Image 1 (cartoon, rainbow, N blue to C red):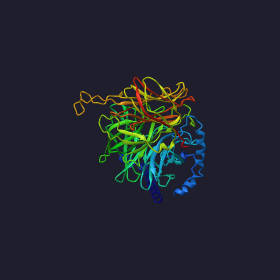
Image 2: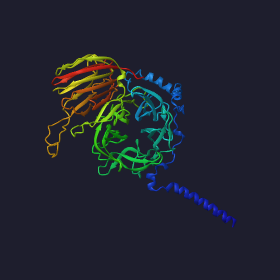
Image 3: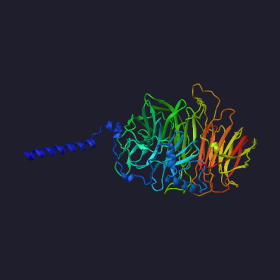
Image 4: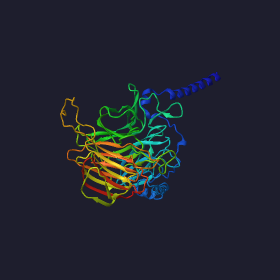
Length: 589
């Protein structure tokens, strides 16, 4: 009897253990898998701990933080590395670069307690997995390095994401590879101390067969770079990705929407974008950012095939759907080499309805400075102020205005001025007073009846090397509607947009510089409107802003020491140079 009772208890205990194991393996319903996403377990181990030294936690008040950073060994190392970087003739002096090795996407651009914060994917030399690097600025131009903000573990790598500034804290949401999307928060003055809200991913992915970590095939979404916002006390997050179209048999760009009351438990809702008739097969919605701009909403993103882009549209807050009504590009060609990469965007504290954005720019030179094995070096673009165009006519191609942001004028010195002149047809005029490879050029031109107006920069004395910025007035696509259209715009005078081009075909004679077809961006000049250019040249980058409407930018790597000159030309017929000023630019380092 005693033996039977003991066996009975043993059997009960055994069955209980078996039931617990079975429940853990199979007990989650499909709805729980899809909606109660915080139940993921911590699947990574201490092997993912970063080898980069961490000297925190840091003090919680600004005075003690600044004093503490004076002796931070990581910052001391950064300072030494930057001095070595500047020895490279192609290293920019007023565009932000990582203090060590390469960088990738900008992340979590935000304004907090009087400082701009720029996070970015950093690759420390002793552990070149992505970490979130960190820099601050008072004016968006002069950046100061801070210690690494977010280290990997439990995730394998700290990939891209965005930030949401609340009254008492800043929330970072990002993709943690091999795990899923992660959330971390910080509330100290310099955002030095970050705490991850869960031990595992808040929105997990699942491991499948083989060595690669992939999304579980039974989930109705995929997870990648996330964005975050808050509506009526509830957090919403996008996960940039793609969806498979069975009819086309192709992958199409898409983002998936999640929501949470506490940042820990996230519920999957549905695909977010409706009405995308604009992107192309092969695009994806990496690094998304969603926010109001003017009286519309913008969803900016990065396509791994075609670079930075954006949608404009309407946000149905009841259905939580975004209806794209128009589309534009920040990059006019392939993503690389030398193209505009991923955006990071945040609301402007100074311009109502405006946004501040920054991009990383892809390299175009093999064997760049401080490269990691097999890698190349990216840089950050100049920051831009994005506002919605007030001209809502269907004939206006430019939905988004773009202007340089921050106190870029503080870098200017040694001003040179070119007097007003008529530029004769088909004759290149060298501007001997204007030269340099770290300069800004401000010019106003009336193209008159010329077929093309061009400014050549980084021009060598015998023109073996030069980068051409060209404007083709009314040589773009026709903007008026078809004669088969029966509506309010039928019968209007034919209107064509213009084209702004940057051509780097002859920018370098070096054999290790990758070629890139010309960037050609559409823009509209209104009747009687002159062309107004701001051209920023910084060693290995040229950015061209036109009339606050359009921007073309690319990387260049001249090989000749005398590639410093500037010339202008009017093709086919004369044009008029109204004014031209140039400035040498100071280093921010």
